[in-house]
Image: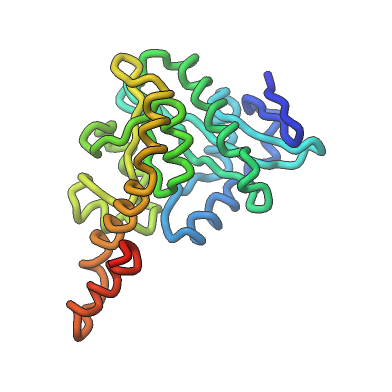
Amino acid sequence: MEQKTQQFNIYIASSEHFSFAEQICDEMEESAKARGTGIAKRSPDYIRQKMQEGKAVIALTTTNEWAGFCYIETWSHGEYVANSGLIVKPDLRKSGLAKQIKHKIFQLSRIKYPDAKIFGLTTGLAVMKINSELGYEPVTYSELSQDEAFWAGCKSCVNYEILMSKDRKNCMCTAMLYDPADHYEPQETKELFQTKSKSFERFNRFKQWKLLKPFLKKESGSDKSLKSFLSFFFNF
């Protein structure tokens, strides 16, 4: 089962791809460090388990080098599904591969769990855009799975302290959800995102600053610093 493009072959992962697990985990960790946010840390054995279960998508180049990856997790007894750990090799980013992988893993999720709500947490505007094209909508954290095992996966994120300080009601990530029983058509959510993308971007930046503020050291002249900081994002 594969989806071919000029540059990549996109497969439903299997035991045939076990050898790529270490590479995938290393890149997930490096990517999270570079962004200062977190993909929940996973072990190579965990990645291999997802491959073995047919709950992952892997992209390879035409020379069979690893290019990208994403996997499925289920929560609350299958009521919720998350497409997690989306990662693309750094030198292949901005090639459109992330979008292809997201579409493939979304299709796989709908086949395996047709009645499940599919959700995700992301700090990236690009991922929000892709999600909107699939019919996801921004939601509050209260609309996500409340499964303790899901939230435990956030412990390896550098922002976990912020999440817990907000009683898991808010954090740096934006929550998005696709509900098969009650959703807009993908074209509608896509158009909404295109119309509001600048607002989403500014809101995310402000939200991240607001959440970080209690953790920053207080400095003299805080009012002046606040105005200067806001003008950087909002052109005051």
